[in-house]
Image (cartoon, rainbow, N blue to C red; front, side):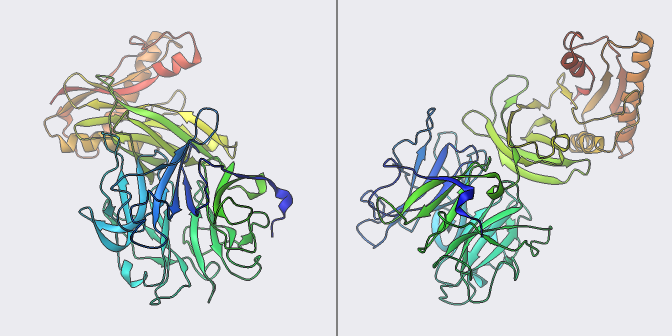
Length: 500
């Protein structure tokens, strides 16, 4: 059990959030600046006059001074005539997972649904997640959910026993755009027979799991426990550890959540509260925090017009090209945020119809566990039309060589896909160097590098007549070669669309 000495302090979020009513289920954004929660029996709630214990979603934003603004009630379609709750908000703040299954905007029953931010600044109608055999498992008295920051893993608490108040924790994985796998128990280490496991929260590292349970070793009722996932089976976990006092009390403790930095945890408590229950913030020491991550923020732009774009985001690990997560950019200003664990290298790109993405790479294996960081990186989409030039940032060669490194294949495969999907397109592949070395050496090196790229693309079945390659050496710099950053920009491989 973790002692109270590891806790720096517990802070009530104050009158702008808490009242003499019950505030429950906080969900905080990855950047820590947006907070959603439930308020019970508030006069502004949708069902206030018709049912006991009405539950609606309220939210607050943290201002530039770190203060929470006065909470506001969310409008329809997030607050409906049902019991309402936010289960998860994506790192980009553009998607939310909410309580209940909705089909074509109508409430269908138990389950979970996704909403997206629209260009008018409002949330879309909820769209229920298609989870295989879901109703075989959600037959108990209560249920709920959360999601991993990468958008690929769904965590659920529920019971397959009709009317049971005792829950287990389950996991589902995203298969396709609209489908999720059948719920799978998190195993015997987590789900103890006869005990109530609920309100899971997977930290931003994708490994550290916090959940509420009345298992032996607690302070009375449900407590918050922490465990670490040991492999990708989602069955092997470290021994759960009770987070101790003052996080846990003799009362019912649940709804533990964090920002991406892991600096603050938010939870519901009934200890020393202004009302039935309050939302508090806990500043934790390192031993209680998850592994550090990188929060990458930026905007997606049309490379030609410089206008912001709403697009889907994909990030992949290199060199294998495995999809590590997904996101979307805001329809208002093209902004996005994604959370990346350390120890791997990533390719990040936006996707939209009629555009080709300029991917970016982040080498995080060289920053192993360097602590929480925030990085800004804009992404660009190039219209698929004659004359447009696309820089291939994730094509790599060893120093003084032109053999393609394996992590380059992911990038070049995207060019192959473009050519196969658009059979009329023809391109010119070009390679460029900085000004170091002789003119003759640079021309030869760049020519061979462009040729290597062309040969790889041709090996995938593309007609040779559709691709020419040229090495331009140092003759076409983008910026002066008088700094390391400038020379790095000038060392590049790119292609131009010459016919569409």
